[in-house]
Image (cartoon, rainbow, N blue to C red; front, top):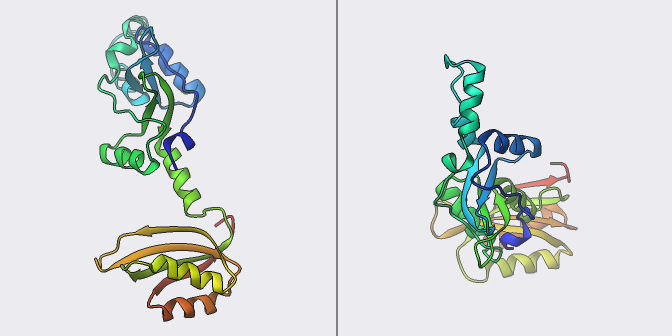
Length: 219
């Protein structure tokens, strides 16, 4: 799964000379939280977020009159509040790499650019979250199992074989680290199997079933 499979595209952009108030209105009218900023050639030169614009707003405790505040706001352009050093990604970047950057840098989103630095999309933490739900079979009805398994080669193959021999079908599978470095955590969702029988088979393979529950499409 790649960024191109989950990004929002086409992306709405803005130029640095746009007044602050117009940029904020554009965001609120379209429920955006950030806008890539482009030059006259359409190349990315910055990004502005709703937070940037709100920080640029006068304090409610200001003693300025409404007319004075409106005048000052009219002088603030996107160029004065945008972030210049933009971290970007590409459509061919693996999704987990984009997720890592978002988490590490604590960003809410990344502009997606082509080979010439033209913004062609944007991927946000919401897009990543949606992809994670899909990969873990969220919304799918089935038996969800959490396992602690030996960190050896061929463990997944043995689990898949066990499910197949029970006439089951694997909907999704994911792995995660646990405290014991010799083991690995696995989250599995399957259909077409009898819960108790599959648990017994998996336990006989040396896998520890930490949790088992039947999830409906709305759980």
